[in-house]
Image (cartoon, rainbow, N blue to C red; front, side, top):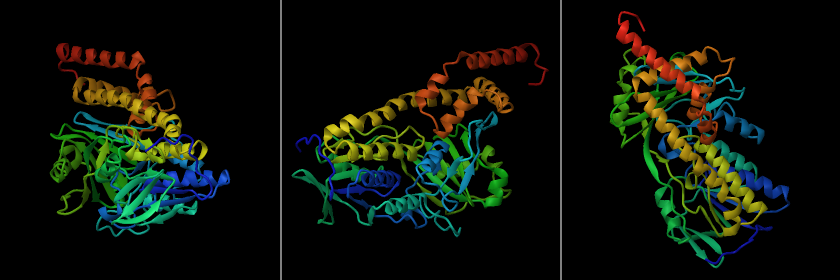
Length: 452
C-alpha cells in the first residue's frame, strides 16, 4: 500500500474500531469528543462480538481487574467517574507476604480517589451478586454516549483495497473505512490476520497467566483481607508470584508462573501462609470460575500503517502493571494523532510512535526492578532487613517514606518504572540493609542466646 502522507479525517469519514474493551472505548471517547470540538462529523463504529454483561468467560475480558489511583483520578478529570456499581472494592494498602513474614504498605500520597477493583464482565460464573456492572460495559456505554455505534459482529478478514481498509465477516463486507483502529487485545488469531497484510505489524510477545474467582463472602473478605491487595512470594514450584484482589463477595487470585494451571491454584490455596487467610474448614470448590489469559511482555512491531493504528494490548503495555492505564495512554495518543495531524503512516510515525516507544523503554527499567525485587524476596537476610526498613517507614507515614513509596509504585503501577528506578539509586537504603544484615550475623555468632 502506498504511503499517503497527510491523509485527514474530513466530514463523513468512517472510523472502524476492532474491539470494545477499554482501548477501543477510550479511543472512541477521545476521538468523538475531539471531532465535535473541531467541528467534524465523523462516524465511529466499534465492532465487538461479546456483550460484557454475561457471567463467566463469555462476558469477560479476563483481567485481574485493578484500576490504579492515578488512572481513577485521571478518568475523573476527563469526566468519567466510576460508579459504585462498577467499583467492587476500594483499595487503601498492599500486603506483601513471604515465608519470612508480612508487611503492610500504605502510601502517604494516596488521595480520596483510591485504587478500584473491578470485574471485566458481569461477574464470576455462578455468581448471584446483584447490581454488578462490568467496567468494560460501562466504558462502552460512555463511548456510545459520545456518539459511537456498537455492532456485535466478528471481523474475520481485513483487506487493503485502493487506499481504504475493508472489513469482512463470514465472507460478507461489513464496511470500508478511512481509519481502522486495532483494539483487539491479545487475540493471537486476530493479530496474525493483520500481520498477513504485509504492513510490518507484528503482535507483542506474551506469557500465560491464571485468574480465578473464589467466593468467600464480603464480611469475611472485609475482616480478613481488608481494603488491601495481597501479594504472595512463597517459592511454590512453578509459581512466580500471586496477587489476591478483593471484589465484594469474591477474591480474584491472579497467578503468574511457568505453565500455571488449576492444580497450581489448589496448591496455593493449601499453602500454610494462605490457609491462615481462609475461613476455618474451607474446602477448595470442585468448580470455580477460572481462566488462562495472556499477558503482554513485549511490544508490537510497527503498530501503525496508512489508515491503520493499533492500541492497547495490541500495541504497547506497561510490564505486568496497569494494562488499562496503558490502553488509556495509547488510545488517547492515537485519537489525537488521527484527528489533529492525520491518518497517514508518517503521521502515526511522528506523533503516535513516540508514545509507544516511551512505554517500551520504560519496561526495560521495569524488568530490572522486578528482577531485583525477586532477588530480595529469595535471600532471607536481605528480605528480613528490607522488611524492617519498610515497617519502620510505615510507622512514620507522616514523615518521608521513600522506600515504601518505591514499593508502592511498583505494586500499583502508578508511576513510570524509569522514575522508580532513579529513586532507587539513593545509597542509604542499601547501607541500612547491609548494616542490619551485619548486626544480625554478629548477634547470631557471638550472642546466640539473644532474641532477634
